[in-house]
Length: 457
Figure 1 (cartoon, one colour):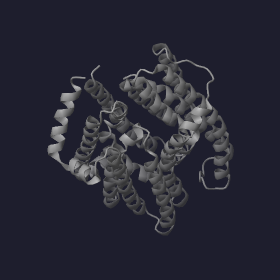
Figure 2: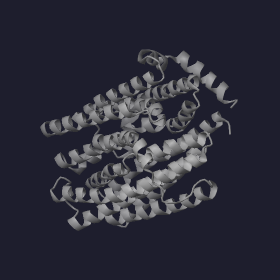
Figure 3: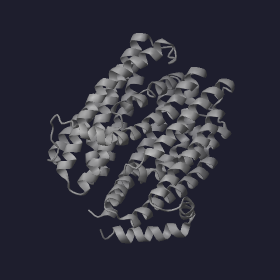
Figure 4: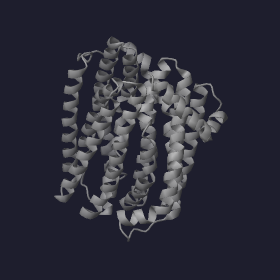
């Protein structure tokens, strides 16, 4: 398959995924508000904030392994891909077993000491919820390693397809359980069962189609030693996300209550439509950037990198203008006429999301080629400062306006850092890359050259 066709197919499948993701995000609060309450929705959001912390249990080795397998298969080194696969799989399983026990007792202590305020959930119920969340997250992580094999074999579209089919199924499960007034433990049990069924199918399908996948207990000390620094750098990504986003939910819940967690989520759901629409090329672009990097085709790597950021910028601006004009009507149709909109908060979150979208496109080159140590460290510091300032200010000014302002500042900084480090990696000044991103002429020239180049490959 030609590279351009592969990218277009991956993008088209991602468009479907983003469309479904938007629908699911919009349907979720409707389901809760009609079948339960806004407080119940806020509690559900806080509960599903907890897996973000559990996701660090593989210490970042899963992500490193996926990138290595992708590059191994690119140069037809299937034995090396098999070795990296086995090392990654076995190490991830062992780490998950150890950290699952560790995280259970941490969550137990947080609940017993009153930091996780769930007024309607008793101790034994929360312990069961914690166990189910740990198993759900463990299955999700191992599943991710197997699914990445499709992308490495130029079937990125199939990886995306499996993802959105899983989301659709979980949405139906959520509706069914809330309609029948099931508790949180039952909902999570259904979610886990669904995840396991998908995992069984993926194991069967990948082992059937790719004969280099073999199972044995192989775990080399050299693999751990050689990749530990990369893995720990990748580990900072989920830790950073957990600190910045999920800790925000926990802090708001502890100070203002679950209702305000739900309100912030509703604002962000509409604002972050921008990310869903503008990040449609990021996933497949990461795969292609890694292949261009390993093949030393740097000229076209630079063009694709900047072109992808330009698509993000122009699409984001159009969506922001549309949402500024139509947000009141959208909220009215979506949540109802009684929902009071704070336009200042919503506008700030829109521009915050613009910078977050630009960050996602700017960081693609760093993460796909395992050149991400500095950016992960900077982002981690950013998140620590964000959480500390949020915790101090929200106890003084208990409103969501503070949260929105902090998101805006934080997302602007991480975008700047990502573009700066990526520019240094490809030996182009940050200023020149800014000019290229803002240049419509450069956008047109790059589009023609990329089509001309990859239409022939």
